[in-house]
Image 1: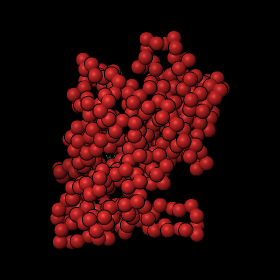
Image 2 (image 1 turned 45 degrees about the vertical axis):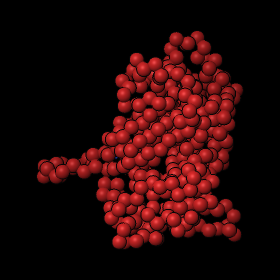
Image 3 (image 1 turned 90 degrees about the vertical axis):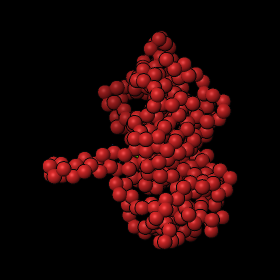
Length: 342
Ligand SMILES: Nc1ncnc2c1ncn2[C@@H]1O[C@H](COP(=O)(O)OP(=O)(O)O)[C@@H](O)[C@H]1O
Ligand SMILES: [Mg+2]
């Protein structure tokens, strides 16, 4: 048995350490292709990413749809098995854990997905849904579950709890449903919360409220978030550091303020230029870089961004893959020619 599993996080500041992580999904071939015995192709959803998540921070992963954010998140909490690479959670290499050890560790890593309706069982009451993780992880404390459920419902703003506890998901609003999902994630007192586009489905009017709630709960419960969003305006609201993903790779990683004040990757610059500005007189919205995001089965050679890049040099960029380089303190960028933006 691994005795580290139920311990409090170590105090050296690192909660998660991801090394050279890859996830390649086989492409489902059609019958005809299988008959013709064509070779299997792979979607390189995540294709070699390394990063750390510091204790107590909100690390954002941003990037266009299909860039590998969700798969990276799932790998971090081992909802997917990596093709290559490793994830250490609080010093524990997840790959070394058996099913039972992994089950115990799950108490400390919880998840909030985008669609609360899809993640709540329609036949469970709110009380049952929020109590479910307690039954799994704290069966010996069954006598206090009800009290714990009341307490967490109150904390997420579903009060009075007795008004909600016997209701079903379809009987409450979308914003309230996402609060239930947050309560269910936090009731086991996790250390890490993976939040995958947690406000994307919510009404615009409640998005800021949900983000404020997540920030407040993070401080109250000493949480660490891996916060996935395709929307840089949302990232700006909540993240401490941010990694920009492009076709399964990280193209830039830095503190949030750094990325906004000194974006060093042409892709990040384009993403920032495309963020809508609320004041219509100051609108500076620009279209995204030309071209579609290429498919992740055959990513472009060399630098994956080169077919869309405004500063591409064709003698070099299609040939050599850029490494993440630290060009300012704590600010990493994977571009051969980022020095010009320093
Ligand atoms: N289970 C899966 N099987 C096959 N392909 C997948 C699977 N999950 C994701 N993908 C593919 O991997 C790529 C990255 O997906 P995803 O991680 O969901 O990106 P994002 O969250 O940034 O939109 C996409 O091309 C997607 O179609
Ligand atoms: Mg996603």
